Image 1 (cartoon, one colour):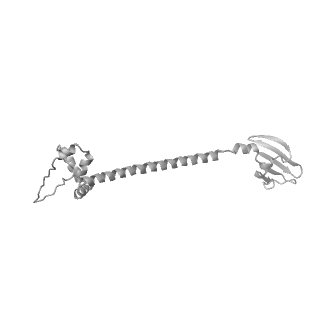
Image 2 (cartoon, one colour; image 1 turned 60 degrees about the vertical axis):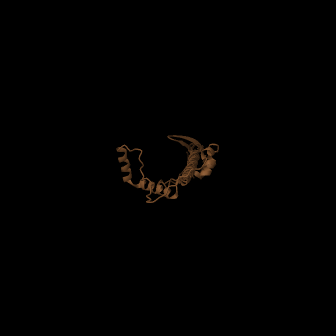
Image 3 (cartoon, helix red, strand yellow; image 1 turned 90 degrees about the vertical axis):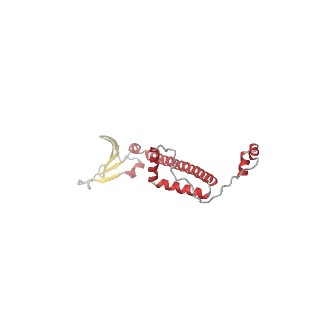
Length: 197
């Protein structure tokens, strides 16, 4: 730092203070013009000293002092924080995109499975299957009965009730399509399916 001692009787004297060492720079206020605005000047009278020639002491930073404390670290830290934020945001959007894509695939698969179940079973049977499945998910007793079946060696037994209805009177019709075997052996499977559907 630069220290300037001045009084109206003998003029001004300037020293350069660097830690415990001082260097006399000369007579007059030898302060760099662009550092003058950062200086502080105090009169010795304000410090309690009485003198016919009041001394004032001015302290100013030097350009070396400014260079020592002038740094680009705030800009570097800001750039690093912005970069981290940008990378985090990018990962968030990438993760969100991948999750939405996976959920879309699961939804598509579920719709296809539902369509397959709809085509395989009549509506009444399908509704009973779904109802039994929902009941088994929340019913602990069905899990216990499943464990009991495993203990009895019935690992392959169904965990749901069989879908069967009692009809006291029923008629069973057996139909045979004439020459169906010969006809279907020379057709594509899709054509056979279309005929039977």
